[in-house]
Image 1 (tube, rainbow, N blue to C red):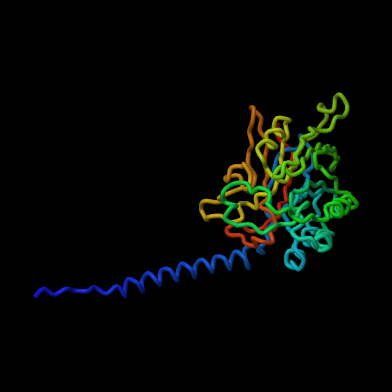
Image 2: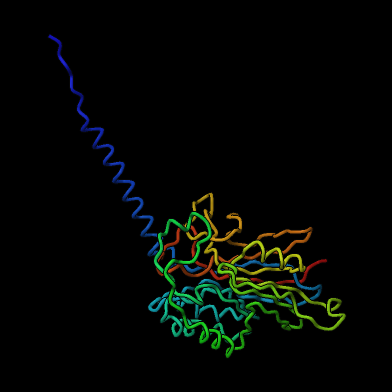
Amino acid sequence: MTRTRTRSHTPLLASAALTAGAAVAGGLALTGWGVFVERQRFQLREATLPILPPDAPDVRVLHISDIHMVPGQRLKSSWLRSLGDLEPDFVVNTGDNLGHRDALEPLLEALAPVMRYPGVFVPGSNDYFAPVLKNPFTYFTGPTGRSAKPPASLPTGALHTAFGNAGWISLANRNQSMAVKGTRIDFSGVDDPHIGRDRYTGFPLGAVNQDASAHVRIGVTHAPYRRVLDAFTRDQVRLILAGHTHGGQVCVPGMGALVTNSDLPTSMASGVHRWRVAGRESLLEVSAGLGTSFYAPVRFACPPEAVLLTLTASQR
């Protein structure tokens, strides 16, 4: 008589269940960190860039971006107000200030100490349209497109009026010269390339010998699309300031950003980089921004930031 032996699968099933349980618990812990801790771990990143004319005094620039303000964000508001203590020489705001239809008043209250200083700004799509609920995984398939459902409009006009009343200059498809501590800075900016509103207008036209006088060119955009970076660089811009990427928002430690929500390489999702085209080179400074979409309130290995740049005299 042949005996058959039945092998119990109970230990294997228990092991698999423990592994799955550990994975779920780990995922929940990481999500909790990203939602409740990382996205509110505000940081100030600093960099020194030698781009000014020889012998020019240092100029301190506060770069803020992607605030995505929502009513009730007290910690973010308090941290934004503290940035006024930095006493920058001027401020560059690269858009996506609003994250809710009722966010204008809390945004302006939080920015009031910063708006005491001269500044320039460009809008992002979330200065025009409220965020909409989307499948978050589509973010990893490439630049996000427009929603099938028309998004609600935001108080864009009131936002821009408030900025203008504070002395901030709109660079949405415009250019402007500004004297900062005796140095002429020529700005050129575009409206948000992510929604196709960019129209590059070049740089200010002045006296016939204006290029012979000491000056520096700075380009400003919300989304750092290649076409915009190339246009700035061909026009001999020394520095380009951008936001939009959120630094990747969800990054892999040791690897970095997985996406930039644009055609910018992921290796340039945040920080200072060199952008080259047609034998010319610009410095590109991308802010990881201060907020997230209302519907995707998570950051991982990519804390929110403002950037303080010290522009110094170049040696060339």
